[in-house]
Image (cartoon, rainbow, N blue to C red):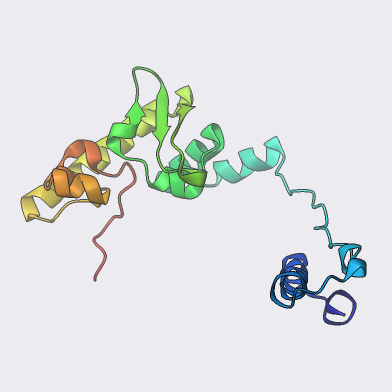
Length: 175
């Protein structure tokens, strides 16, 4: 009924079936052998939509500024958007030509290669970020967010250059 009449999602169907099985087996202690043969629905296989190389090139060509740099960085490294936006100055290693992605998918850290074509642009972005960081220091702003345990151990860590964002917001958020 859930599938044919209500057309619910696979996960909703599976959750309802699991609840019924739990009720009969574990709460009511009733064994219904026919219930074991009920097939669980499967998720339909989806083919992901992927842009061609030409489409990506055309898209990147019409972008400019920080948005273009971030898009090229994501495309060139395979990072997700939030991973790119969370990059800190200390995560960029020009000597080893790598970026350290912290707290990525699954809460894991990883290292990705730094695209050589973006080094000059990243250095310029870093210089822009530094001027914003210096402005924040002269204005006496609190600094950037750091992990809780480190904030307790090193109260001024959020004010250090290495912990500043590579792609900071252009203005402070109200709140």
